[in-house]
Amino acid sequence: MPSPPPHRLWTAGFVLMWAGQFLISMNFYLLMTVMALYAMERFGTDEALAGVATSAFIVGAVLARLLTGKYMELLGRRRVLLAALVLLALCAAAYLLDTGFWGLLVVRVLNGVGFGMATTVLPASVQALIPAHRRGEGTGYFMLSTTLAAALGPLAGLSLSTSVGYDTLFGVCAAVALLGLAVGAVTRVPELSLSAEQRAGLRSFSVGQFVEARALPVSALMLFVGVGYSAVLSFLNPFAVQADLVGPAGAYFVAYAVTVLVSRPFAGRLQDRRGDNAVLYPSLLLFVVALLLLAAADSPFLVLASGTVLGVGYGAVLSAAQAAAVRSAPLTRVGLSTSTYFLCMDVGVALGPMLMGALVPALGYRGMYVAAAAVVALGLVYYAAVPGTQARRAAG
Image 1 (tube, rainbow, N blue to C red):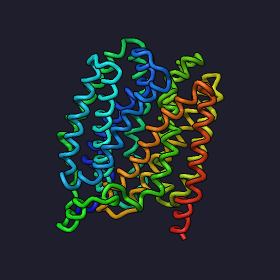
Image 2: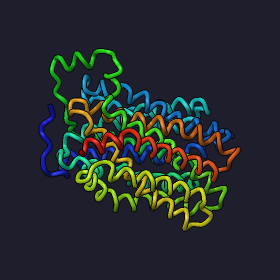
Image 3: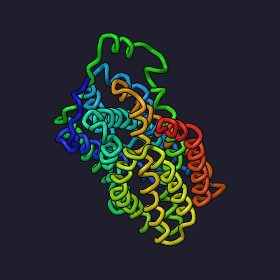
Image 4: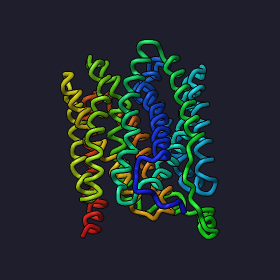
């Protein structure tokens, strides 16, 4: 078993893992928000096929998460992390090659595999460094690494692709990936010490060795959340071009990140003291409001208002649901709990661009964002019916 976490949160190990997660997420956001537009401009695809270029990455991530939660304990977390970081660096360099659209899809899938491996190992391993009584707060602080990347990555990706071209953007991604590999090389990753019986159990093949059933109810919420968020992530840029709102759209994720940076520590402490429902109910409702504001946006004010509300809504859901998933199972299953959570999130983000992209020709971008809001609203209904009820009963 990993040694008990110290009372102090910001240890050297926590900071290095935070930095690694930030760099991996930065690469993700640099590319994710421009990939649909890149596919349309470079290969002349329509919105639905461009959505496939976005979703191919998530397909790879889903496949990786199915296996990583289990095999990172058998093979060693550090070994799996380093293999993932090497793969991410190779894929970042491969974007510079002229592979054609179908070659691009292959690179996207492999890139997703590396991303899925790395972002399963790091969030699972960092839990060993977070004091149990600060689980919500510590998870929230750790996920700020992703939030900061969400602020800088889309803006940098859009700016680089429009000002100096996609090749320069891909070169920056390669440099970020190499820096992430360097950080990973000096990071001490807490390993899980397993008994012979536990190892034998992990080597067996059953659904329970790939998915943590106790984490599944709250993790399933992320299917709805992922679809809603993917509509923003994949189609904000083409929507902004069509609506002549490119400038405000560039600052959208900055507004989102600033709000998360301010609100998430409070949300984490509230969750630790008052329970999951105190955070997840209002956050899901605010996520719906953010998507409706984006659907109605015809001015810079409404675009930035949507990004700000998204930070309080989606930003809090992301860390609160993860903390709830981790708490639902014992420490020996934290890897599977983490992979189950991100697996559901990835499936939602993978389906979202294809489903939402298919709606654009009939509904337009504004109608598509209304549909995305409806999906998240269904997620709120699901949460109230299943995990929210479980959390209320557990609280007495």
